[in-house]
Amino acid sequence: MNERDIDKHSVNCYFCGDLEDERECMDADEFNNNDGGSICPACLQSVQNDIEMAKASFKLKEEAGGYWQENSDFPLRNWMDEVQNEDTRQGYWEWLVEKMEEAEEDA
Ligand SMILES: [Zn+2]
Image 1 (cartoon, rainbow, N blue to C red):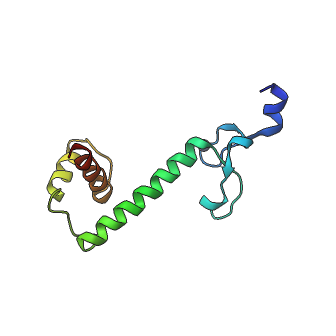
Image 2: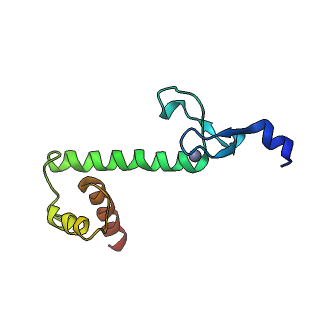
């Protein structure tokens, strides 16, 4: 890609602000209330991961009976220990998603 190309097609990612080639970017409207702009591939991946996480944690929360419940295989106490030890920055339900995925992979 030559320099003129980069200039003509360069846009700042709406999320990270990095200069990117717009042809490699997606419309950011879907993720920012139609505020316009572009989203770079890395940010798009990150946002999609967050959406997948939100779906998965929502499902586990519903299955357990709501926000204040817990999963008996992975009790709150274990999550609290990890938070206390600074092993995670996640909330309980997001942490649970990852624990259950790990358990599945180990099985
Ligand atoms: Zn970005």
